[in-house]
Length: 305
Image (cartoon, rainbow, N blue to C red; front, top):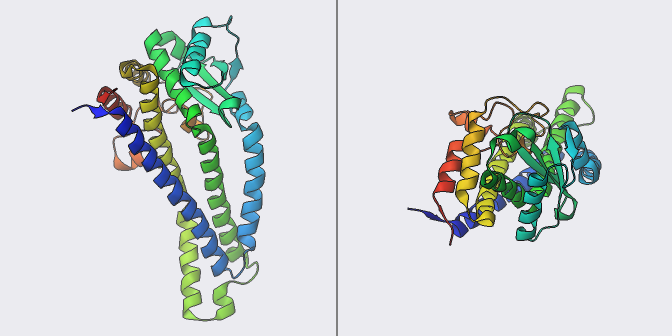
């Protein structure tokens, strides 16, 4: 039985809010645990100060850095009328400001959106995407990327990346302070079993927290991909276009040349392993994107009303 598109979008939004809320609580709780175990808030303060600097750089210059390392070149309408007009028409339909348009000279079909908000956004597509897709399929992909912009996913991914960095910094600072004996921990100050237990718990948390943070980040990324698929289908009113694009991209096995683990989550489909999705449980939870076949099945089960 076909799923109602609006219910699907609402479901994904609720799941995303849950993951984000849990992530924030996780980071705050970790900071409190480390500060309590170390009997000082200095670790949390240092991590937050570094995160603020990272946030400032990422907020105002992150998109330029991403576009540069991806080999993206900005175009005008005359350079590629089909791509430019597709972005322009769908942006108008979505009620979004016209983003900057970029092309990446790469045979692997893919695309991504970046920026800090809809007024400062960019859409990039590879030459391979323009070569292999039909017009309706290209519209589906661009609608997906514009949905990321309209849903502020481009800002969300930056915030989540900063939170992951904070977790890594907190864990690293705590473990280094224990290793090199910098300052005094609560178990040393208190000399009781409770203090020792908290110290052990904090050490275990410091080792596992970066892994947990990465898993949460990937889970949020996958949920936002499902949401962008649904919103993109709603924008074009033609889910089959997006499903067809995913089918063609799934057949291409070569990775995007300039993509890396740091930028993989931005792309329309996994750019690192030829979009070959792992079938194992761990392969799925460690992937930046949902399995392509699952995305295709859900799109073909959507009912636009």
